[in-house]
Image (cartoon, rainbow, N blue to C red; front, side, top):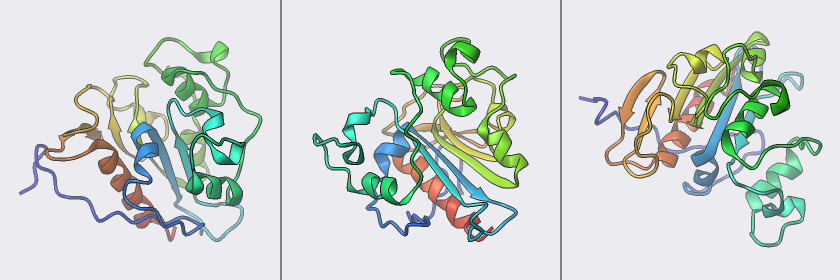
Length: 212
């Protein structure tokens, strides 16, 4: 019987996007290891151009120059280049070379000088794009690294219906035999590999809500 130490296995990996990308299991892992924010429309059809399904991926320590679509030549990034070509690009936005400030800025859309409080914290008074998307009728989910405060209720407070997170209210292993918080419940995956677990959760969420 499944337990926190031996949870039930997640469904096989299957990525469904509007671009019908076919990724190998480890291709998506690097991005999900950092922070992947996955959202699927709840109230309206994904076919409606006014309410598209949204997959937002944040990767720590990934420089602008690392992506082929940005002119980078050091690495081959064909899947990211395809996303850039067929998705939506935001070219006039700026971040920080460190994790928490980048997360605070991305979540709220505000420069750090206006709302950054301290490392590892997003103040409860802030309003995130998760809150705004929920109000617009979206079903929301966040997976990967959190590091925005240790209150187990924060993901829901900031507008996410579901979560599968590392470093929410504890800091166990992140990669081999990871310890995660899944919708507020601590779960240890032995054996397991953290990026695979959170990626599977994200893809399962997309599969469940793809027709909404």
